[in-house]
Image (cartoon, rainbow, N blue to C red; front, top):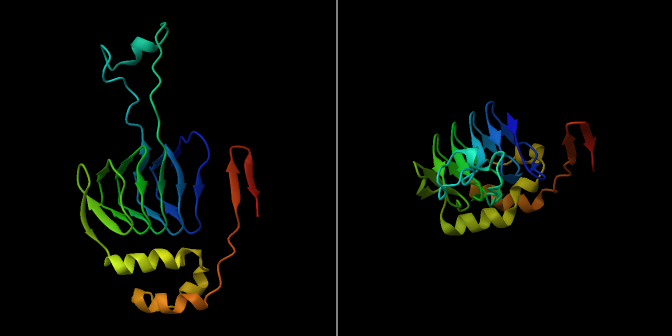
Length: 186
């Protein structure tokens, strides 16, 4: 995995990121996310000047000219599944519960629980009804302990939502990773 983040990046508990993925202009990835191999999150859109004489960097390398591209950071919500070799451009926010299909090129925000696919990615459908999406988001089930979640009827989200209020919130540790090592923050 290649991490080229300018600033801080938080990655939630139980999220996995497969090999050959690249994290660039993204500030947060939520809990329980499944990120496939070769995914690029936060691909820069304007790293070459499209309105200059050339797009080549010779114009602003060892010259008086300077090219500073505007950068927007994006986020990934909780329980997001991003398929193999998908690319999400900088500044794009991916909503909780969204699914991004394999090899999709995501150029705009993805709503919660939306399924998108294609180049450029387009909305295919929503995973649930608007009412169910609202209930899932309000439940914040991803803030519960996974060992407790496993005891719920996970193949029946409506039943899970009925039982969630009885579960205690998880007490996840917060860990800071730097090139100098690892430190438990809380």
